Image 1 (cartoon, rainbow over the protein chains, first blue to last red):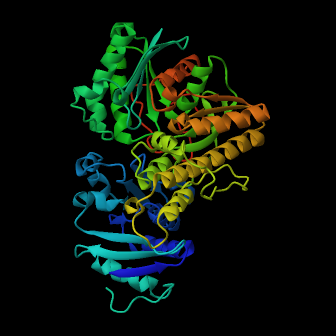
Image 2: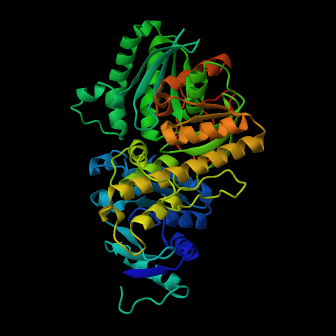
Image 3: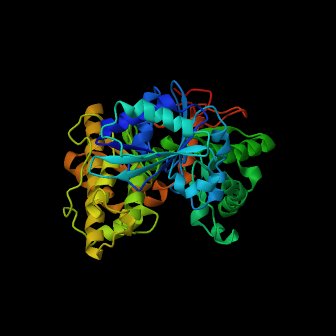
Amino acid sequence: MLIFDALNESDTARLGAALAETLSDGTTLALCGTLGAGKTRLVQAIAEAAGIDRRNVVSPTFVLVQEYHGRRTIYHLDAYRLRNDDEFRALGPEEYFEGDGLVLVEWADRVAPCLPPERIEIRIAVTGAESRRFEIRAVGARHVATVERLRHRLGGECPSPLPPGEG
Amino acid sequence: MNILTLETTCDETAAAVVTERLEVRASVVASQDALHRRFGGVVPEIASRAHLERILPVIDETLRKAGVGLDQIDAVAVANTPGLAGSLLVGLSAAKALCLARQIPLVAVNHLQAHIYACRLAADREVFPCVGLIVSGGHSSLYRCPGPLDFELLGATIDDAAGEAFDKVAAMLGLPYPGGPSIERAAAGGNPRAYALPRAFLRDPRLDFSFSGLKTAVRYAIAGPGRPDPAQVRLTGQQIADLAASFQEAVADCLVAKAFAALEQTGMRTLCVGGGVAANGRIRQRLGEEAQRLGVDLHIAPPRLCTDNAVMGAIAVERLKAGCVEELDLDVFPGVVRSASQPVGAKKFS
């Protein structure tokens, strides 16, 4: 597991840029965290780094799915309003998972059984008024190397030292 | 002339029969109707499959209530933008099938323009040109509206929609869904100045909204940073009432400030407000007070026309007048975040 402590929003923006550069198309990123943790904010940061106007990236809670097209395509899904896995499956998520874009799923823990077995999961914890802790891990074998590439990319610019022995 | 209007942009499956004189002959909104029970009380709110199950019964019920047969329908109008692709497709496919079978015109409706047109219907007189404010679960946007079919985006939320913030704050306070009505009820016994919550962009001339920071501030008021999930914190009844009132007041402050700033910037004197959040009594009151103070002509759709419905599809009358009839290869335009002016059909729409 990779832990990234963001002291403020500009650290979150750096993490977003690193994710946008590291994750290949067809990767699903499962975002978990309570209300106000900053899931949409991280998606905005990733989108901005992918050449998408951040102002177009708003919470998809109501519309469930949004697509953004910049230098790359991002599918932004949100399971907050869904009451069960069937409602999520009714959205036809495979089309996005098997598509040619990056798939970012908010409230992913609510629909975990419907997500691709190979994915990256980020848990966001509120550690202060501005600060957030991002716990990033690969689910399945394929993305273990992706997380290592991300660790390498963030290595020089981690705002706080990584806890010893993590990973 | 009878126009059948269909609305399936998001959760509600709705149909109405309206006339060219804007009379409403019948209106049915599935999730608020006896139709609920036909599906054993479980109405999936979201999936397009639910629209598919409901669309034909809703149309039948609407025609029955209107006392007209399908052979007395002269045109079918359908909202084909914006919304969830699968949901939009159900309404559009039904509309096309009816038009093909009956050889009658198909009219495309922009759901956001229809929300503002609800004000025109309620006013029973011309309201354009106006500034349009749409506040709902999915939208918080301001438009310059020279005419009913002519919208220019002035500003919009950069993160959460106002209605979404209501729902999420309600969830944090342990109040039931939908959040709008339950926060309004809880706020009735609360002090709107009990908590100092942020009002984004209030001193900024741009006409955008941001409600994400407000939501997060409520979270911190319940459980500070590093503390557990706010939904697990026990609050007293008074704390809930005070937080609900303080939150509601902060949203009202932002909506009032930006709506009237938009009037000032555009030089317009009429404000039309639609969308589910416009059903909130405190927001209606605050907008009303400010309009009276500044001598602005204010139109807020009545609550039953604020939430999604097909009556507002009567904007189809304007499109018919403008000669905008669609071919049967009309498509849906699901995604629209910062633009209401994308094409709903091929013709005469800029």
